[in-house]
Length: 307
Length: 265
Image 1 (cartoon, helix red, strand yellow):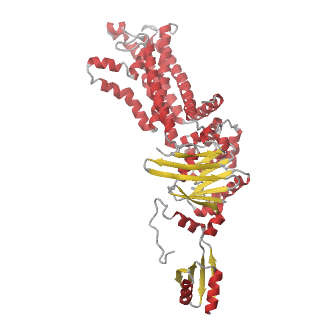
Image 2 (cartoon, rainbow over the protein chains, first blue to last red; image 1 turned 180 degrees about the horizontal axis):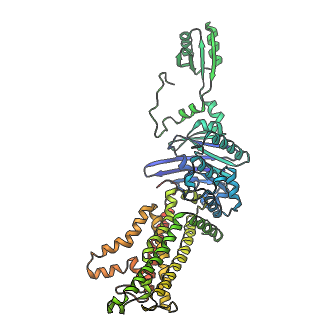
Image 3 (cartoon, each protein chain N blue to C red; image 1 turned 135 degrees about the vertical axis):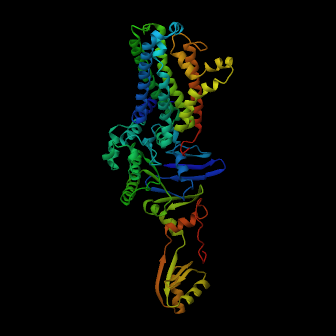
């Protein structure tokens, strides 16, 4: 269980994290989502006691990270896979980590084999690919068999097989009752790997909830292909609907359900060839939520027909 | 504040880290080569040129410190070991992994200092005793020699080794303040080499006052059985050097405690 309590972090005049307040519960995979530069990594570093909070605090299992006696037995973290001395072998890196928290040496080989890099355990970390480093980082996080795990952008640099592996792995950890907190700037990744999502932008809390809730609340559209598109479009607008897009493929209609559009067309004698409700993808929800909260975004194209 | 059993665990972990990187091993080899190798070279040159030396040089000749001169070159190798032990954590970013395993920053520095001081003291004493004994062996029969059983001679050899260990700690503190290998090593070398050169531009009477506070001059005092002119005695020199180390270390630890360790520089 991770609790972030009115957390604020300032660097000079810049506010990196602005009054963040949330909880991460055990038993589910919680995604921490936000555009690049939105304060995800800063928040994780404060949770881990690496950076000092300007205001508020973060606790793990009810205490501040710095007060944990053998922290990696309670919290496993992977922040930056390349943050390992390049001249040290994978095994020696983990052995030093294990010794600091009084974890028995045999555990080192266990986790190396578990993440699938047992065969390169005696190679220097500097020779590792990003994917291998990522696996070594995960091995380090698992070393103390902790109940709380934090991963910052863990799929970066992984091949498709590795991504599949890591998704199943998060799921398994959560099913064992652990708290799993995973940050990402990729909505599509979170949509498949997380149960709960916390969205932030520019350091501020935007929304949270289950993946289903987030997409349910978002406005969906209806794609309609009919005998007379102009007439249908006029009908829709006069009935408080909006037409987002109109082309040979059909009309993209917002503000009305597919049932309502079908009934309107039937009453007006328009033949409907196709009527497809389109749920907003998580990606679109995310873009809508974080629009304006993107620190280094390209200018967004404003749709011709507006919202 | 610091639990004893966990300080042991931190120390064990830091010892593994210390001995599993090449820079430490290379630093140790260079220290051995410089102290003993240069010691052999210097003492051999003294022996072969002994008959040509002036009566004054012969009268003031010190067989102890002359055999230990190599350690004044090895101090740079020891400094690099001390600096890299902490700056490599920052340059590689592994300080973040380290601190998530040992969030108590006092305890982390405590563990690192124990490892660094003990290993450098053992190394320093080993090379200084070896250089002294080999040097006296080379002098034997031509140049007057000193015996380790003499208390003052023993003190000089022991303090020469301690000097190296203290300089490693000093370099470590600079590394912790600057967090960059190149910057920390430059400052360390400047303090030992450049500052004495600046001292040469001072008026003579200031120069004498200034130079005897210089770390290398303190090192010479520590390894000499009799205090050289315009210098402190061996024990005073040791205390002054110790004060430098403690002072720098306090600044370093206070900064370390206050700074964020997460972001890159």
